[in-house]
Length: 268
Image (tube, rainbow, N blue to C red):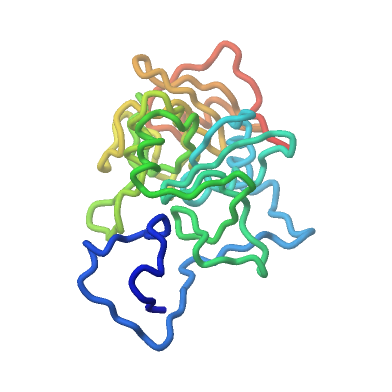
């Protein structure tokens, strides 16, 4: 709708006229949803024994009450499904949302409410919307306590490669470089241990880096590594019947085994 000059209150103006050179009014506009995601139906649960489920259930143990967290696209975002009911975790999305809620029910879908992966979401009471300038000020300023990201490769000393494969089309690097660049943000990587039989945890990354010595913990379907930025990887947890030798074979670099090595945790 085009209205007369002055009908829009100054405090309601989102784009000042200094930026506008032409207005085109069409007959019909549709807000298209690029990635429709809705909440799972009651009674429908994923296979608890699946690799992704195993990784996500361990990642959910990284949450602490009252923390601010940013979850990457894909597997990391699934960890939000396992935040305990008695715990408050403020989820931040770099496209300008704090207080992100679960995926909506089919009758609650709003094309304007999406996460950084363009998936439909909801917002919790007390949530807030803001521009990219404020969003990245939160991230770069170290106000985000935890970020959980996926990865294509991680090095022995915590270098991360997760934004592109040379020769393949990418839309952009997203917010990962900023997220891992803050010294005050704990960086946890969730990923499958290998890809088509090839190592993903290696002496040095062969793909373009997102950040250097930025990863604090790696969670795979086989184990949990902590990253010492000077000494390298320390094996902290093993899943089920997985052995240290099996982890060594699947890992492309050396690592230490913690004296208090324990079974890999799984949130209920």
